[in-house]
Structures are given as C-alpha cells and as structure tokens.
Length: 248
Image 1 (spheres, rainbow, N blue to C red):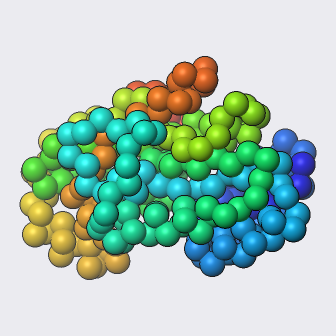
Image 2 (cartoon, rainbow, N blue to C red):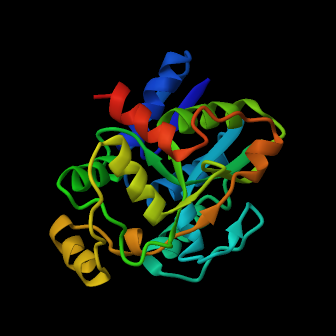
Image 3 (cartoon, rainbow, N blue to C red):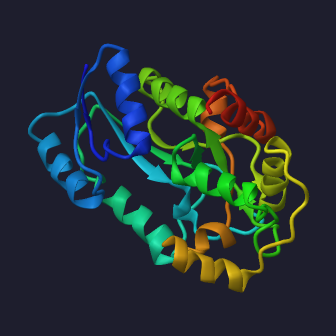
C-alpha cells in the first residue's frame, strides 16, 4: 500500500513510519505542520481517492472535561483554543477529504521513551519533583507506544471502523495516581505536590502549556474494545515499568 504520512517527522510519526515500512508499505513522510498539509491532502484526495483516510487527532479536543466519562459520542469542547481549538481545526481540515473510508483517531498522551510526554515526567520525578500536580484529581488518559502502533494497524485493517475512534487505554487515572506510579517504578520516595502557581511558572521555563498538566479528560476506547482490540498495556503501572526497565 502507498501511505502518505503527514506530520511523520515527529517522534510518533517516525515510530509509525518505521512500523508501516516494516509491514511492506511504501511510506512518504511530510513535515510536522498540521492544518495546511491536511487541507492540501484533502484537496488532492478528490483527484486521487485513497482507500483509507486515517486522520490523526487528539483527545484534547474535549478540553478540560472534569469527571465526565467520554466515549466517541462525546461532543468537542469550545475551548481552550490551544487544546480543543487546535484539535477541531485539524479535524475540520479533513472534513472534505474523499476516501472509501475515513477514521478520526483521537489519541491520548502516548507514552514512549525519548519523547517529551514521558521523559519530562520521568526526569521531574527523578529530580524529586514527582508529587501530584496541582490538587491532583485531574484525569490522565494515556496509551503505551506499543498499543498505539497496534491500534493504527487494527484500524487500517478493520474495514468496519469509520468515524471517530478513541486511541487510549481503557483505564484512565488521576494525576495523583500517575505521579505515585512513576515514583514507584523509578524507586523514588514520596514528594510534595507542585502547586498550580509553580506549575505555571515552570511551564514558562520548559516552554510548555500549563493546561497540559492542570486539566484532564476521562476518555475510554469504547469502539476499539467493541471491535475486539486487545491491549498489551491496559493498566498504567505495567506500562510505566516496561518503559523504564526494558527501554533504557
């Protein structure tokens, strides 16, 4: 199969490109920018119709969802713009794409070594800053890299799947449990919480968005489970232990 991978030069894109190539597909990788390349590809699809359009997206489209349990029927949030706004624009750019089948893969935080999402959390924990972030009840939806790659394979192969699909573990956890699990697998002692003002200050130094740590979403992969997908790392602690012990 000929595969055009937009945004394939990032950490996850490189992983995905390597897997697809290893499966014998002919992979062409485009740059990391999101909306404009998607629009260009959508226009091109009306001239050269692909068999499958797999639109990558993010569960951040639901904004800060509090205690609500979100499956694929949930409506996107109105904001904040740097989360739900970006994700909505990304999905909208593909709305007019022509394909025999289109899947919108709304993806959780993918945990993999040598990626900012995992390494930043692990390093802060190693430095003694592994306490809960803010008050700690915010939900954290996440996915081990092996399950992410397997889900992409699964979605491409299962011709019954179209529309929105959640790529996330079936067991989201609160931030307090996330940080406690990280301390456990990294063998670090209990740590004091990081108050919200310090999170906001640190985000300036780290050049990241404080909302990524202070907000959360409790998302579940209803459609993948109904289709029979089996997770290798459904629970958080084994997923973190695998990344720490087998990928150093």
